[in-house]
Amino acid sequence: MTTLTKKNFDSPDETMTPPKTRVDNVDLGNGQTAARIKAEPGWKWSECIKPAVGTDSCEKAHFGVCVSGKLVVTHDDGSSVEVGPGDAYAFAPGHDASVVGDEAFVGYEFNSATAATYSKE
Image 1: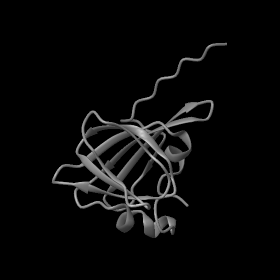
Image 2: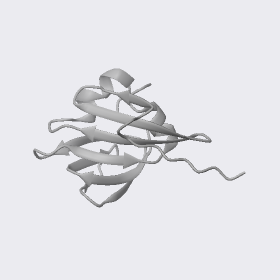
Image 3: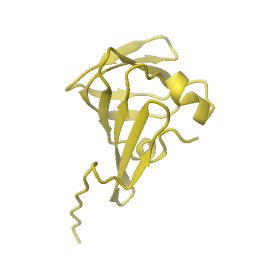
Image 4: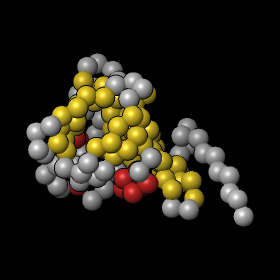
């Protein structure tokens, strides 16, 4: 049987609010979760999320699209990338990230495992 599912991020199934962060998750069924991540100006993974998860760097894979703001992501190997509105992105585990400028970063992520466990160990 075909399943059609629609959820709105303004009525999320789960919301997480680490410092300077809001993550809204929608459960689309069949193990599929999507997330809207909002990180405020001044947000940095190593300051806002690291204390909750306890790892040296972010160990989650990210796959999504930026709709507003800018984010700089630096991998443990020293490589870095800046993403902005309209950019699709994929970040491998082992990175830090920070918001650039005075506008909040808003991204939508489609890696179900990451969306379901963001800011959790």
